[in-house]
Length: 434
Length: 174
Ligand code: FES
Ligand SMILES: [Fe+2]
Image (tube, rainbow over all chains, first blue to last red; front, side):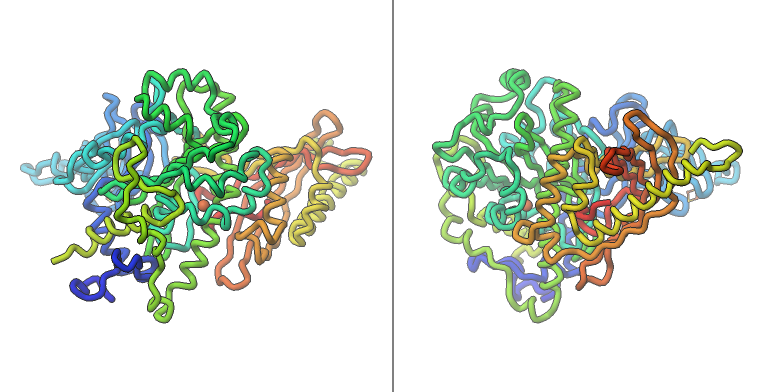
């Protein structure tokens, strides 16, 4: 199968509950995804608290184009291509920093914090009528924020970010903004590369409750803090998968019945008091019952909130940056409420990355198996056998009405509905029906 | 090590040799995955830190940030996972690892008969069936406490010379 096989066998076969392995290994599909998905939709760039002061910047990617995300003198957020208009050199070669201007190291073209060209240093040789304002660093044409998250799009026509996140914000916002001060990124993101396709991570986070007990048998067996872990196996019955038409989704793992409620209610009491002012009653109720939420904002931003210590819940954000059909780079941030004490923040940070960082006891076993699946799938024999999402099929058309939240909600949580719906959305963008 | 005219005393040499042998033995024990013996080399109040570094412009203050920052209890959980074939996917089958320790210097002495030591580590991690392995290069700053039972590692701070880990998640003790 190739990218031009419209009308031929589809990569995503919803009726059969199967997805071609090509989708998870093929470089041509990867290049096509960059054009059809990453360069058209919204992409996560940075959290506002990563660039708090004027001149602060971080270097990130939108699609696979490297960009600078900076805060200008007026405090506004700017994002522009990190490639000089003269001969293309990177104007920022650090990962982050603070700069009054951006001076290209090659011939000295100098740009301000908005990306506008100030001087080429050889202005006297330029044609008299040249329009300097047209020679700035290309701006990310659409730049919007949602609760501290900075998103950008190369597509000038893209619908507003608030429409894109839509009703899914009901689930998202309790983890992004639940106190008057909002959330804060606690340290630079961990970064590590994995020999697998970016979608493997996105699918794992959108709704793969089936891998928890096998992949993560280590930490689930060993960690004495998870006193009620025995309930995890039965929690799925009382838990939900949420699916949004835009491809976003999440899994809500609620308390299994009969377990002591307070073994999960680990938000610090003084912070919990602040949640009441920022959240709706329904969202508060969700938080109070929740053991773990894990989800993906289409296409490649994921998040998880889970207990990481007796008194700590960590909110972690993940980006699965595509590098090829079979390579990705993971960035992982840990957040806490701005109002939290320094001691709480430092505990959340340390325990958060003990579990989910670049050396995390959960993380290490996930990525080992993702690379293993990729290694074994990337050949013409294996590719004859599509991946199975069959446990989605009995539930696909039967949303559960009992949950109060918006979007489509499914029960139980340990099926593959959210994963198949993610792939449905991917397929709509990648192989539209003629 | 503070020396007169750059010349080490016999006592300095004995201390340095003791530290060197401690670090070499530790490396061999870790290469052999003898985690029980390794735990025996740690002080009860050990703190184990591994950091990566962001790339910053020359002149800007460098930013290193922790990938691991653990005391004995969390470190114990980490080790119990990777040493137990039933409980680990990343280390079952186990990786093959080799640690080269060099540039060992005693740079100071602290309270409690403790010694400040810097050294360099180059560690290679191979998955036997995968062509490229992981290479971890960095500097260690250790605090080693001299006890009546022998030297014990009280603090390790490894600063890796990289911002990104290129071989998946880190499961190699450095
Ligand atoms: S490439 Fe930037 S000034 Fe020439
Ligand atoms: Fe996982």
